[in-house]
Image (tube, rainbow, N blue to C red; front, side, top):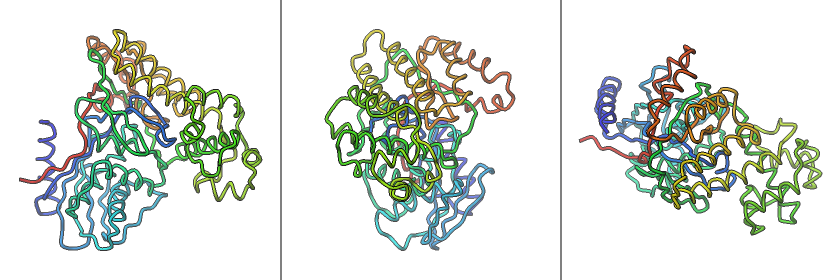
Length: 447
């Protein structure tokens, strides 16, 4: 990784200049692209991501005081200092250092520690922020591994992923764990099927003869700074409860749509039929949900809704459940096609990606006009499949492109989407690129 070696040398110099000492070690955690399986990890379903080569890199120097000093190579992100034993994370401010504090606090709480050593940290990242490539989760994972290394303690990759997934919720995002899992469990050359409860990862060999291309819409969406994401999480939770009640299950214990399927012991295709039968397409008011579940508005507000969704007046349950169950089925179909490797594998996988985007756009409503335009452009110029990736409402698309048409594809997308727009053109170097599955989080010791 010649680029990584150069970055480490540069980071060492900057650290020395900033803190007047040499780092003791460096930690790297990659971003990721989700190939298929959008907004279903927090519903309990498997997803199919791969790590990208872009990453977060942190140079670390432990200190004898109990002060945590954070700096960033990007001047857009101001320095931050706090005491290591009194970590406060402000959910109302998704500032860059709060993501580091999430990982730090997660390790602290896991081991039940009250006295933590201080450290100087210099952060360098080349994952475009708010692009749907998981820069924030990579920083949480990096911070968790930094803290573990400073303490001289050991955890498995699975344990680390679970701690970091849980601790990212300190920032107010109700994510499902995919981003942290792939950051730790990724291996070079293979995508992963990530399954939950218990967390496990299975290699998925992607077809030869095609590459995945990332294209950034250049519309930024910070999922901790908007309620869109958490409203979708809540709509899925409410859909699960209403479906469970409809089928005579113990609905008050149900939190995820996958639990309803497991309890009923039926297929995803059958769950789609249950959804058609039990839920209506018109949005549900809070009063109607209360009537369905036999609870009061106060119980709904205090026992089910999260603080940042208590102001919502209506919820789309049918559309969200339909997306989740159909998307979960597409993930399994994608893996099956990769395993069987038929001659038309690229065509079949591309169609699954196209279906996924349509569902994200129409059923989950997490796309935006620029993403839809970019997806259309990618398909027009030869992508066999193209879809939004990440939370949506901005960020990136991922496209499956035959390898022999890659250079003409990149040139055509550049001209059609970036060329005529100065702000997009300025960011294009980090906005349009082919990628292959990269490795997971690592610690480098200073020689």
